[in-house]
Length: 219
Length: 267
Image 1 (tube, chains in turn purple, cyan):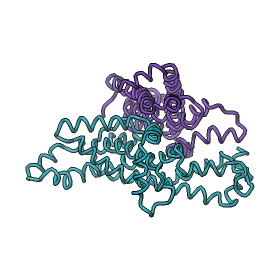
Image 2 (cartoon, rainbow over the protein chains, first blue to last red; image 1 turned 45 degrees about the vertical axis):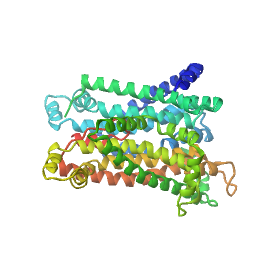
Image 3 (cartoon, chains in turn blue, red; image 1 turned 90 degrees about the vertical axis):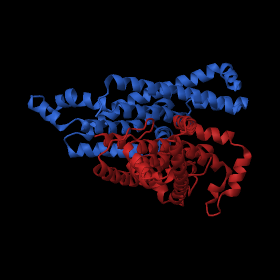
Image 4 (cartoon, rainbow over the protein chains, first blue to last red; image 1 turned 180 degrees about the horizontal axis):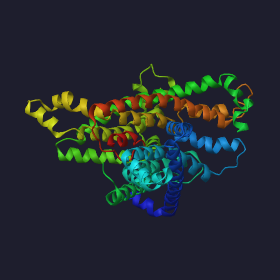
């Protein structure tokens, strides 16, 4: 049991750098997912049928395609096509765009959870469509979906390991594999990586719980 | 855009056996998904029941087991088992694998992939099923007890039919995720659609026509989109029906990608 502790202290720098890379992937992809997800959710609830359909196509495509396929399209596919995309950009973009589909769906369902009467009240008070959405609907929508958004974030932390497996990005799992193949201490190396991932997912769980206590609207 | 739709870049589809080769790989994925689904559902149900056991010790131990596997990245579990699974286990799988499975699925290393998929998904499904069972009104179980039903009778006749049906949409969503996750076993060198895609895009492999990576993998992605869309249509239909029937709320299960079902149910 102590062997993994030994391995951790011996290879601390490599593991810490892997952890840092994973963290940066997650934060980067989260930002992409938040921005793109909000835009796609806006398309999904737009007054035009065509915009709604466009948002729908985005969601259905990115939600149903395996992340690994997306990563290969974003890196090898674009490179072979002559687009000089880097591993980081491709990894963050693929993970972020994939997650954005889930974010968009959850935000949309949150918007629909705000009762119609509130929208009507806002409109009759003289707010225009955009103001109603921004000041009345969205703040409440976001607060009803804190818990599912947290779930998506936790799933994304786990999915970030696929980026390292598919592309030349030395994330936590990749560093652990390198150490495992060098020292033959497979168990210990994977235990260290597991602790890293559990730290991230548990931290995210706690953060979500705190946010929920503070802001959530229960329906 | 020009590159994407250039007919020259789609010529590979009709050249030699490319399309057939990729579809054959995709069939392996579907078979892996099907096997993993059956076992994950069975193991998941067992775990959910053990998790809800009156015996505190069993409940705590099984709860820790579930939380461990569903909080680790699946790719992590696959890679770990591929390295750490003892050789005799792999040989036992090779001996036990039924002959009607295709050759690819009879290889020992497939066992690591299947086992990882089942470990991860059974844990997630157990949590989904638990949420479904717990969302039932306590009175259901109490009434069944008062009627003198035994534990297994209560589960079989009263609790499971209601609890599991309530979570059917969430279960289907997780099965869609499982279907996508079968691509991850390509990392441990199982010859499925991703590997076949790599072979097709190898320089001048078939018929001297180069297959561009972008187009080939878009094609592979579309195969998944089509199958999963069919599954999710089914899920949506079930979801609407359940909501109309019961109008109940089920607590969302944390850590899974697809939270839609549970959010809709909250409305």
